[in-house]
Length: 75
Length: 398
Image (tube, rainbow over all chains, first blue to last red; front, side, top):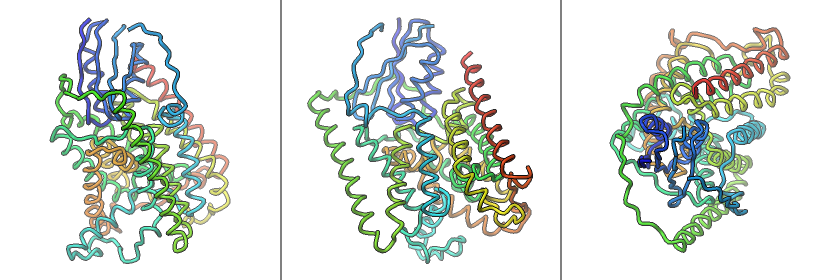
């Protein structure tokens, strides 16, 4: 149940999604990845992709236009 | 993480914060594009004014703009539709972002992002001039009008975006797993910030309505274009619409949701343009055909444009929208897009008439023997692409 943070602040699409995909690949089932994002488009495609993979996704707005996407690798 | 607390979104969140679906964006953008066409008589374009702005900039230093093949003497901001809709994209997105209380300056944190924005912008400027339009003016506005050149643009911009996706890893900032130190705001401070942003958003709306009213006596059509431009920016921001992603993501991330939304927009515009096309284009007279000629310049330009759009993190329209949202990387991209347009224009005005521009316009109904066959074929091809994109995403997910 390791938790890892991935800093994608200030990064434009598709960099956050590519980095998220790469990070998740190396994680074990049950691990949690927290992605820091401030790109509104990435805020849609990162959770979209993760949900499509069947992972648990939670989103917290930590500041104006800045979010943390919490992805649990469930499978 | 098995929490099931369902927080009901407030009315504010539902109206002004929650993002729209890509399909909703596609429908709205199609309707706005057609509305723009009805009011202005020409289709939506984005990259055109950039050459003029660049030439104006150089003329400040005494450079004769005609050297670059641009005419700035007759240019009037409120007399130029694309200039108004470009600013509309920027400020519409800004308003959308402020009303959602999500605006902030999105700084670049690594020099590679500067390089990506600058190089991407330059390539887009070059590409748009070689292809006589960006993916709005040369693709989105022309494909529904049965211009086969737009299909050629689509193929080459897709190839360019795929190459751009491969190059992207050289421009990605290094992966950092350190959580940035951030002062957590209290609930009260956040509420205050939110109120300020919403108030600014409302103030901007009022400001632009005043501008529209002030220029209306001199430029009777300008208010329409200001409002349509702002609406386009608002819709693109709210639905997170991105033309670049539509042809970049299938090969890069395997996602095709935006691809399918753009295909839907193509289909809707094809249907909405159909009556006009059928009644205004004379199949026997090629000079009435819409769109660009198919030539090497178009293929090269759309390919380069595709690479640039992926590196910069947005095409021409996307760049304006993201600047409105506060992205520094896209602002860099715009500056270099303008330079690229001016230099690209200087080159294309010299290669005119060479083998690069040898080619002619191809109009789908002319080669298929009628408007109805063209409509059916085009919609079937779009449907086929939509299904292929859907299958592609499922396959990529494994």
